[in-house]
Length: 210
Image (cartoon, rainbow, N blue to C red; front, side, top):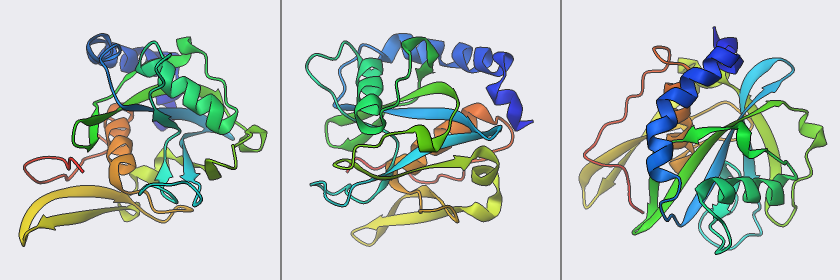
């Protein structure tokens, strides 16, 4: 059952599976980190997303993302980056002990890695959040059950120079389309949280590096 991923046993299982990667990657330098907040909305397991402000500079404005951002020189490690950015963007304070571990890093652009940090934030009332309007246009949660339904999953094939390069997941039929690195991180989380239920269909020699 999906509710098991919010149980103490589900948390222990995830922490155990992530322990090696977390020990190896936590203090490794990274350009940015995002928090992957596993929450319960009205008793239903869900992931929390933001819609980046359309007023931001850069190519990711107006995209769906997880809370997070660039590393600050004062950040001790990627976990601190993810927690600090989440607090600044959403007014959501996540204690460090609620962090379950680090997921596989991704390349957002050449030599710029993004590290996803999974945390259990518990029961959440979205109305209690205080998103920073300079950074966030909207906050929403999608139930794991929605993300795991085949009719809500899609894939985008990318070509370069007329040749197939790779395929990335897309999650559909929510308030906003989830694509790009956020969809890949969502896929990593689903593989961990719902083993045997979610079957990724990625194809291609490598994930994009830009």
